[in-house]
Each structure stands twice: as C-alpha cells, then as structure tokens.
Length: 349
Ligand code: AQP
Image (cartoon, rainbow, N blue to C red):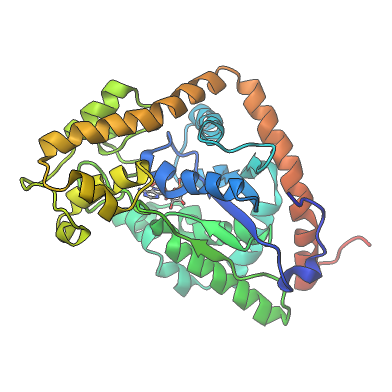
C-alpha cells in the first residue's frame, strides 16, 4: 500500500495503479452490489494494488434518507464490506462525508461539466422518472460528485457494475476538459473495470429491470442480510419462463429471467455461463432453482452472519471509518490543494 503524499504534478506520468470505488448507503446491500462490485473490490485488494473504497453517503442523500436509517445503512455497508473480505488494514475504507474535499472538488467539477452532458445520463432519467421537476438538483449533478470521488485520488481504475459505465465516461470527459481548459496534464483518465459474469444483476421479478436496493418490492432482490429461508423463498418465486435451461449461452437469448438466474449461479460458483450451463443445461426451473438457492445460501450466509456480528459493535465500525478517512484525507489533500491552485484560488503560502 502506498499512502505517501504524492506529488500531484507527477500525476500523469507513469501513474501506479490506484483503485477507487464506492457504494451508496441508500438501503441494505443487495446481491447486485455484491456480484457487480464488492466481489471485484476484494479481488483487486487481494491482488496487491492500492485500493480505496468509499461509502458514498453524500450521494445517498440525493434522494430522501431518514437520518437514523442513513447512519444505520452506513454502518451496515461498512460491516458488509468487511464481512465480504475487505481488510481495512489493506484497503482504505471510509465514508465520503468525512473527507470534505469530495464536496469541494465536486463543486469545481460542476463548473467544468456541461448541462448537455448531464442531460444525457440515463440513470437520472430512470431515477427521476416522470417527476423530473421535483427531483433534487443533487440527483441531476450526481455524476460530477462521482467524478470528484474518483479523481480526488488520481485513481486509475474503477471497478463498477455495468450501470455505472456512462458515469465513468463522464468522469473521463470531465478530467479531459479540466486538463484542456487549464492547460495542464493533471487528472488521469480512469479506466472502468466491468468484469465478471454478473455485471448487471436483474430484478427477480422483472428481467428487464436492474436489481436495486431501493426497489419498492423486497421480493425483487436478495439482500445480503436475508436468511436462508428468505433467500430460498425469493428464488423459488423468481419470475421465469416455462422452458428448460439451454446447454449453451446462445440459448439464453431473448430469455432475460433465465439469463439472470444462470448468471447469478455462474458468478456465485466463480465460473463462466457456458461452464454453468454444462452442469445445469436441460434442467427445468423446478430443479435448477433449489440448486441456485443452495449455492446462494452457502456463499451468502457466512457474510450475513459476519455482518450481524460486526453490527453489534458500531463503535468499532465508526473507528474503522474514521481511520480510513484520515488516510484518505492524506492522499486527497495535496491533490485538492494543487487543483485549487490550478483553478486560480488564492492559497496561503
Ligand atoms: N444490479 C446490479 N448488478 C450489478 N452491479 C450493480 N451495482 C448496483 N446494482 C447492481 C453496482 O454496485 C455499485 C454500487 O452501486 P450504488 O449503490 O452506488 O448505486 P446503484 O448502482 O444505484 O445501486 P442500487 O442498488 O440501484 O442503489 P439505489 O437503489 O439506491 O439506486 C456500483 O458499482 C453499481 O454498478
């Protein structure tokens, strides 16, 4: 781990890889967050790259959050990260609001990004829906804060689920425009890392909708804290079609629900979709669903148990986050300072 203060000017030379990613404490963690993000976070941490993982609480309040629930969800997410294998000794693990430079750089980036760019963001359209006029300004400008989260650390790689690809492209556009406008080579253009067999886990009730922690239907998702009976029940009731499973991935074409369940199975089994279909191809859903439920319980129950144990000591979780925030601040401060200098803000010498 390299948390030494970097010389910001050296940023766009041969940058050592640095990973940054985050998750919103906008509800409980889902299987989508786990397979699309956290599993990859842990693999990257264990590969020896410098990793910074954030609980993006400032993003969560772009939609209304009850303060006590937000505090609880923040600690639960911290517990989820650790229970799934993040080691606060190896990764920097903290909540966004404890490092105020995120908001500061977010403001500067909201002056760099163009309204036309943000107007194209499909997540805003999905989340605001027909109530666009009543959505918060923060929900609209969310991607500028996300760009700040990443670029504040000069991160080079960002593991995310498929749904965040467009925001990552915007982050690159913001970095490029900042560098161009100010005539510097300061912010790197970070690479999205969208890998694995389940980069877009879909709702169990509707194969065309992303599994989401804020979906009103609890039956649409598997929560990381669900017990074995609940997981089995949700999988049993998951929407499917009447046909048997195919023996090759091409046979999942036009069958979104079947594709989703097979992808979940493959991701949990750490295998490819084709390899999974060699095992389960030809089976009816009545045979496959119990196999999936058994595998999901085997993989998720230990994480849920560890989360529960960690949640009994919120003081410890708060201390982990405070320590992570101190370390994150140490990396961010010189980059923020140099950014303000580039922009032309008078600084104490
Ligand atoms: N269904 C999913 N499949 C794969 N990856 C997913 N991610 C989220 N849902 C899926 C990935 O998890 C990371 C954190 O996402 P987030 O919590 O910051 O925001 P989100 O993408 O908006 O997730 P949710 O669950 O849908 O939250 P709400 O309901 O609050 O909006 C990201 O890397 C994301 O790609």
